[in-house]
Length: 405
Image (cartoon, rainbow, N blue to C red; front, side):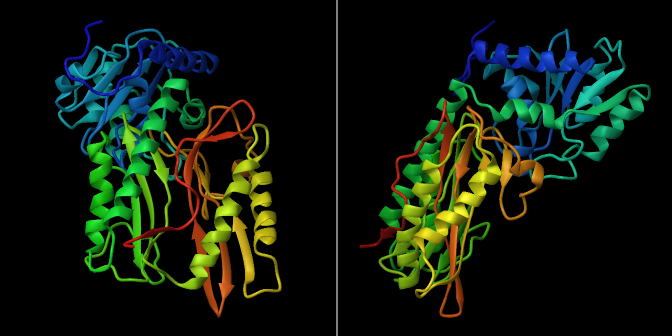
């Protein structure tokens, strides 16, 4: 195998073989002749995580990659301007030119693959994380079904996402580096944010810092600022003022592995309710984090978050309608499971048990009603489940940060 010409973060051939062997065992168990992972760069590249997981090709805002993964023969990566991937990775040598017609190029490769069972797995037909209607493009699927009318197309989404959810030591190393960049980004915002600074300048400081540290783009980020902000998909063109609060979700992606952090930042000062609530949230977050154990169900931790909230903010004081709620979602090459948010709390998800090798952003929320208004506090770090308990990948202290002093 020829060493790549250009220097990028790379995973080992041993890591490739670990993945390929595990996928082929699953294919064999289900009598599948081949697996196809489609191209789809949606949701900050998350929707084609499986293609990158199998080929080590990908990275960049328009880097569409599909993969044909036969049970026996050579794995192919399908891309536009495919030769560029020859010089940056050493996992696959069968690189097929798509010329933006990925379905047609996939058909060309699949015609070379033995299909004795006439059963082919495909990822993303439905029930994909954050995409319940699937991520396979209409034209891509039509090209396959038209060319192979006798083939049974088997949805392989859950099987491959189940494999991806458990991270290897090499993957955790990449996620730790991404988390370090997230921490750098927040430190930079705290350094530059002050009254009179444009909102987008503070946001740009965060994005610039992760880029300078070696993160890929695009990455997911949410951002909001003001006296009582909500998170938006981009910064405003307004100025920051004393008393403003910045709320956010910032990600970095070292080697394509997305880690996330949440860090509220006050500009010199903020609403006293927020200051008190975030002080309580720091204790709340730590107690919820300490309760993470391999073997516990997601539902148990969700219920514990509410119990802890009632202890941290007891009734009878200035706050009413106290609520604590688990929020977490897997981190990696894409939107990994389990997804536990306001819209992702199905019984099947809540029944899952915390597993060694899971890596996720952990950001349980604490909310109260005060003076007729609803206040919400959230803080988060990327964590990994180890042999029994969880370990943080970041180094920030939970709670509210102050900028502009």
